[in-house]
Image 1 (tube, helix red, strand yellow):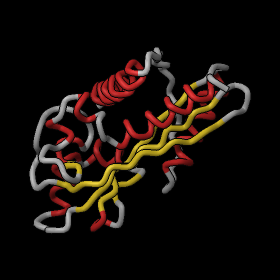
Image 2 (spheres, helix red, strand yellow; image 1 turned 180 degrees about the vertical axis):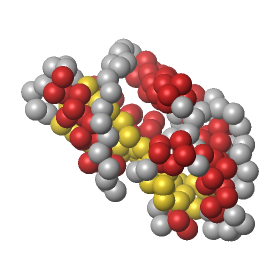
Image 3 (cartoon, helix red, strand yellow; image 1 turned 180 degrees about the horizontal axis):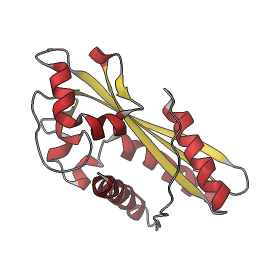
Image 4 (tube, helix red, strand yellow; image 1 turned 60 degrees about the vertical axis):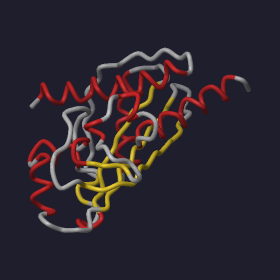
Length: 187
């Protein structure tokens, strides 16, 4: 499973790097292992990971955490999405939903930025959609092949990075960070 986790991190980085490069910004991947706290709150998880990285590296950094929230399952898997994906996977979620017609869901991304000077800022992005009845597409990672954004015919798993970055939860949060960084530099 570690190979899949590394692959997911590389794909996440690729998505984020493309957004940064569109604004003429370079991004460096910092390979750092954090101990993720168990919490119902993605913001707390992201802040905790950020503080772990900042304690070891005295440079401006950001971390991202995301979750899939399924309405009929009371927001499950939510902040436990990574663990749930590793344990029951796509088919497990589809089995939990069975023939349920209400398949409303959303992805939420939290980006936590911090600098060695104590400055910290949180950016969020959310995309509404639904869980499909079957796996569609081989692209992306995690729950992408079963999540279809609202008003779109494809799942994230059927989209390339550029297409997904037009409206994904992660892209929304990262674009807020980039715009804040660019505006901040002009002050």
